[in-house]
Image (cartoon, rainbow, N blue to C red):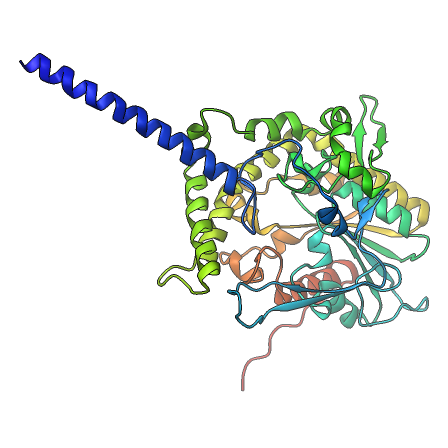
Length: 435
């Protein structure tokens, strides 16, 4: 009798387990499909290798550049909403990005060949100073301190390779005494990329050139296969080229491309589940135009994204171990160009917000790179901005709204003081005691 009862119980349990497994697969599949592409944030998985690109999306790509992949356009002014707000609420945080006739972000001081010194900066979005107004960039703070023009040729998502190429194209038109190359450590991933989608899932419009380093130490420029913006509509026709020249296709994209059973990809990563929950709650808030009491969904989502960035930080840590020679070769190309054009080259490493947690536990992902650059290139001056800004309260260094990923105006002012002190020996004034 007992044996029969167990058989009956098992017969009832097996369909229940099967149903649970099916439900788990359906939920996991739908969650990966819905949230794997990101909700106002970072995609969690690479769902498709070639997502569709239509003309409407292509029309928004106003910064396309056949040589660099993309580049800020001269004379353009844009306003960017960086705030977190519900539909219908007042937009409180809008920043203005204004480009001058050279394609540099505007400066409080005009160009004057008699200025001493003249300075230009090249690099990524931390050089551009995303998420702050034109007058809150470190270039403008530095311009005020030195009473000179400081050009800002930063561009969002640039790697050291693109920044170098832009410098070579721009320098003769806007020569300066000093050039400050300013990038984050994520540049190690960017210089190994030709199609951003393979590392930054969903960034399908960004196809770029890259340099490859041969065994004899020579750099070879691999140009972008996209000559016209319309070529992006048929990007799959370049699949062989993209897979061959983009390091991340094999090492990051394919490991993050989900397949059956989907529950392993979704439920196996707790942060995927948290991301889906908070993204769903945020969507509900927006749909019904009211906040959920007791939960700051934007903050929870941002915290989850930071945690989800830890594997990427570890990946870039490994890339510095394996591809350090390529990075140093690009810096060497920067120094050689400086010698040719007779300007002082400066390399400044800044810290991306999403890496702060990882680096607090493991140290800088770039290790002792700057020390080795100092030893290798006598003409180069290096500045470890992240080290100089070191603090227990890293959150205070960054904009506390919207993406929250870039330096705040106050931090940009500190960077200007640092550059002034390191390059020109101007001592920072100690704060005066209160009366």
